[in-house]
Image 1 (cartoon, helix red, strand yellow):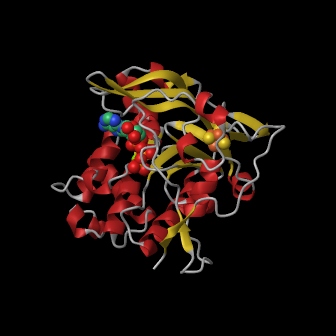
Image 2: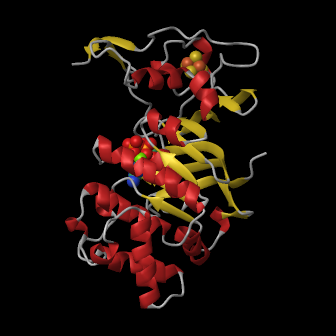
Image 3: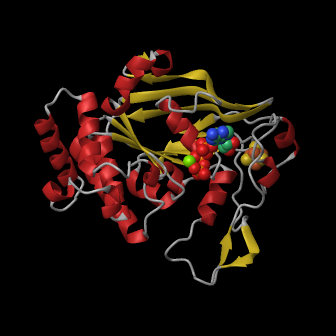
Length: 343
Ligand SMILES: Nc1ncnc2c1ncn2[C@@H]1O[C@H](COP(=O)(O)OP(=O)(O)OP(=O)(O)O)[C@@H](O)[C@H]1O
Ligand code: SF4
Ligand SMILES: [Mg+2]
């Protein structure tokens, strides 16, 4: 059986603005196994980044609060650690590549400076040793002529190269867990593929586990072992990637799958999209959060929240009609919006 190294249990995160409380993450649970990758997918605003930043306790302390749950790493609950202990966890045990790489590198310092500073903040190395390590890291992430490049500024690198530098910084202290929040969205398709291949290689070489946040299911099929589908701050489906690929269960997942453009798709075929938009998380949601957009909704869905259950081992779903005894019949093209034709 796989050994889990990170266990997130019933995580709850709220944002407060005046009297308005937004429940951004509402009872998220998952386990990350050693040497495995987990993909988190879901529409914009579904709580992917807040879940990730909460693991590192990097949510804005002035407006956000983790109101419940546990985050267990090597037997310790990260939510109970002091700020000092938490600083040691960041970088050393868990590292993160943030959603917007352009804000993560400081334009006034050389790439080498930023790498060396990170290395020395976590490891007792001389400047010379840290510089050597920085060169090795740049080489590891495929930056050519690292001895020269180490003295260059971020603006002298291409977008893809900057992303490689971000990965090098994240790997500076050999973390066992890397959280990558949309690591390739700002890059063109060819560079995206290079960065994803690089991450895959590094994961195998460095014995890491990756939490990969993405809008792109293709990335999950390619890179991940487990998948978590989030909607309105909740997990609506989770499974091993091959189980979900062959047998997706939640109507929201079906909508996501239909909205992906596949290579084999006829370029004039209508593009599916899930109608409507996710619910406002500052209001209490009584029934199923997907009810207003779900082509399969029935009366009970408006009044009762479906629980996350496991109709088959390791495959969880939160839908009233996907239980051990009931099974929804997936309708073909349920999300096709006839007006949307791809050009
Ligand atoms: N700084 C903030 N202040 C107030 N609310 C916030 C803040 N950041 C996030 N939220 C709330 O938390 C919810 C989840 O946001 P999150 O950034 O996790 O979404 P996401 O799934 O990462 O979306 P995206 O795909 O666009 O990155 C948002 O819908 C928003 O309501
Ligand atoms: S519980 Fe009802 S509304 Fe929610 S996904 Fe299932 S069928 Fe759709
Ligand atoms: Mg995000």
